[in-house]
Length: 109
Image 1 (cartoon, rainbow, N blue to C red):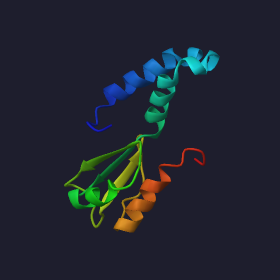
Image 2: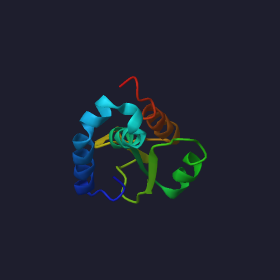
Image 3: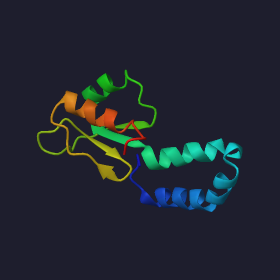
Image 4: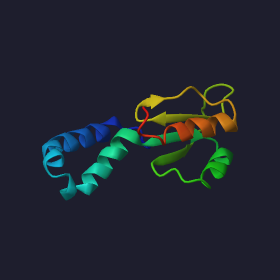
C-alpha cells in the first residue's frame, strides 16, 4: 500500500487464498499467516504533512503506515485509508486522529 503498487496486493491475496484451507484446518500451525491476513485486511495508510506525522507517531497504532503527502485534498490536514477505502478527508488534527482510531477497531466493522 505504501508504494501504491496493486500487483503486490494481488500476490498477497493469492498467497492467502492458497493457504486458506490449511488456516481453517490447523490455525495453531500458521500464526504468521493470520498476522499476514490481518495486515492484508486492516492495514491503515495515513497521508498527511510531516508536522502531523510527528504528533501521531507518539501513539501506538500497530498496523499504520504514515506517508508525507504534499498533494492532499483541499482544506484537509490528512487522509486515512484502510485497505483500498479512504475515509473523508480530515479537516483538522482532531478529526484525523478520530479517523485513525476508527481504523484500529477490527471487531465492529
